[in-house]
Length: 123
Image (cartoon, rainbow, N blue to C red; front, side, top):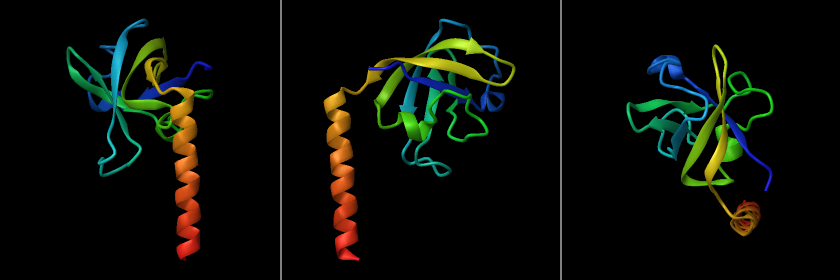
């Protein structure tokens, strides 16, 4: 499977760029009950706690990376990323652990299509 990259944003609400180092592995956790974004994925460091979120807007994510909504279907509830690049406003990471197998993604896509068809039939 092709490598997946994401952008971490919102660091200024926590510790800024200080805790980030190239090569550092971070834990990501989906937050479906987040009141602002049901596709939200928080990023956590064992040493300090929450350090940001996976970007989910074309304005906050780096070109060539997936947003939280885009990566959500490829990863488990908890997954790991590795810091690859750090800019003045973004941290770009590669997903290194927690990718779903291709069969799981195909099954989820089929279920989603079936659910959409059922909704259309009841309308």
